[in-house]
Image (cartoon, rainbow, N blue to C red; front, top):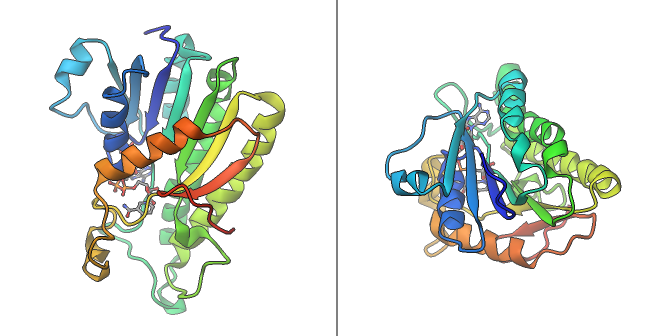
Length: 248
Ligand SMILES: NC(=O)c1ccc[n+]([C@@H]2O[C@H](COP(=O)([O-])OP(=O)(O)OC[C@H]3O[C@@H](n4cnc5c(N)ncnc54)[C@H](OP(=O)(O)O)[C@@H]3O)[C@@H](O)[C@H]2O)c1
């Protein structure tokens, strides 16, 4: 492991946005090392970074025991992460689909969506506390979504996904308050990437207006800029890709 002073930690690193954040920080000379954690094995194509020691790839399934085990492996990084991106999320799968009406609500789908979108990020915030607390500024950006905004909900539908992101925002707000007391070096951002070309958005891209479907590279660059300019203020900021605040 490493004692590099300014490292980046990407959780959920195999997804469209997770892998783009890995690439963004690998190409950032201000970041000494990138630690990527994923349920998937190391992807082809990044070998040169791993050989050079800039990339460390660790695998962890999405359960608390496995997550705690991988956090144990990060002990030497205590105080070293200046950037953390939590990129987990689920909108659809072979067995679940966003609800259009009340009759579509399904208990096990609700639980699966809440687990991926709310529970997993919450567990990372618990397990990583001792690693992230320190003297150096640390910005944590978690992938939220504008549809998690209660005041912005004019269309309805997508019950589970919307509610899981609203609940995620409340977890982040509550964690920002507690970290603000116990780890004053940490700043929280709930981030809305905009509709981005990934597997998650693929089935819904046909209705996206021209020019409004972002590449993962564009969004990763935007988020890196937003993280660079974030102030350690003990607050949760709910921001879109353009750095604009979103109403709760
Ligand atoms: N794409 C968009 O248009 C868009 C818009 C708004 C918000 N977002 C949010 O951005 C985040 C990333 O989405 P994406 O577009 O990059 O999606 P994606 O390509 O489908 O990636 C999904 C990520 O979620 C993780 N994941 C998959 N199944 C999981 C499970 N059962 N439990 C916990 N984690 C699981 C995976 O992490 P592993 O690497 O560990 O497998 C993967 O990195 C999500 O929170 C999403 O809601 C995306």
